[in-house]
Image 1 (cartoon, rainbow, N blue to C red):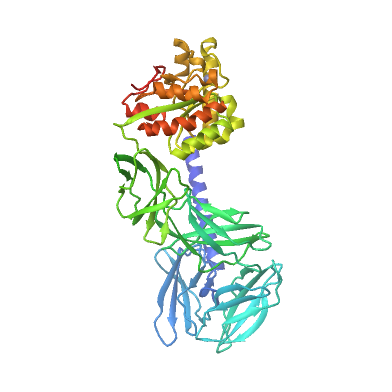
Image 2 (cartoon, rainbow, N blue to C red; image 1 turned 180 degrees about the vertical axis):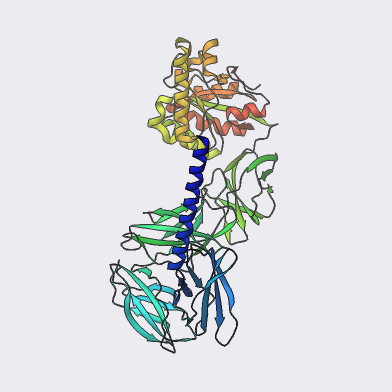
Length: 584
Ligand code: ZN
């Protein structure tokens, strides 16, 4: 059984072998000529040849006119039957042969083909004018003429449009209409009348070229602005780094500005914008727009170091050469540049005690580029050894009363703390925002002036968190202090609120008397260093009393600070759930 099977297999193998040998011989017989052709292509002379089944590789040889020797200029594998001689020069004649190799030795030689090369002319630039397209090209010293080919506006095949003499290097095509695309190609004609290959068309959209008018640094990156191109459906933004040649598309937008958020710090970029119409892009401004992104200065801090100086410092911005420091006194709306420095700190020796100063820093690269402004930082020039009190106002904000109180605070450049009701914020948000901008502190007085011990934990948490979010929504700051309505708390409600509780050491009883004289008298009789004074910014009398209290306190040498500042300067560390009455 085994023997029979073995001999059957043997016979089968032998048969297959014979068959394939026969087939090889047959195939070789069919392909025994290696036929070579050469023609002008866009980039050089393109050679192509017939396939030989037995060939394992091909080698291309070239002989220059006047020389006797062939030199190998290329090699291909058995499946590649073309080769473009890109080193061919215009006006030289070359003779080519191709040799087929099989197992390392020459198997067949091709016929030799002699030809010369005429290089097509590349379009250098398109200029889109109001009613025409101009194209220009580089001079070819060996050209006798140029043939300009053009497509129809629908993008059909190239056909001969005009022939111009060798001296002409520009053509203006007036036979164009707006928002159509036109393809062009140039064939070189040499002195013997030989023509180059016809290159592929390059397209130009008959549309105005958008120009970038501005590139500015923002916190997010480089913001580019350009002028509207009539008919444009959208714009493509391209970027290249200043030391590279290739543009990369980074954005497409329908707007007339865009921000490149991927720009690296201190790196120079060139931007171009191309209008898009019907899927085709316009030409672009060849110069482009050079811009550089400089990140805003980080970690700016300010410290009141002596009675007359603030120390401002910041983290270095790699790439920046200089920094400008700007200052604004709190009763002013104007920023003044007070220092230009290459260092990362500066001491402002021109400050007064009891005032608030705001600072920001901008990075520069010489005078060429500037970053956007850093975060603004404030210094409160409080003399920690001096007398201080905290005015506090509850139950607001109120568009009328709080605003009038803020007028007084602003006039004297002092601060107070407002314990606000969440329920009043939406309708009285302007004075709330203004209070924060003046450096005042906002505390949490619950949402609906509730009696905290009568609520359960969830209800208390809601009263507090709703108010905190409303304050944050309008001012960007979150209250750190709480004051219980009526001063009423319990152990578990203090835990649920989970903030330091601020009571008072002087109750002006303004809610009871609503009398200016009585309110003022309470303050004059009871105030001492570290007092927390309770008032309500919902009574006319309180606003009137404030106009007397503030100058009187200042005259007496008190610094009017927020509750947090009072506690900080008096060395009291506030803890959540704990009640504070004063800073004595
Ligand atoms: Zn209250």
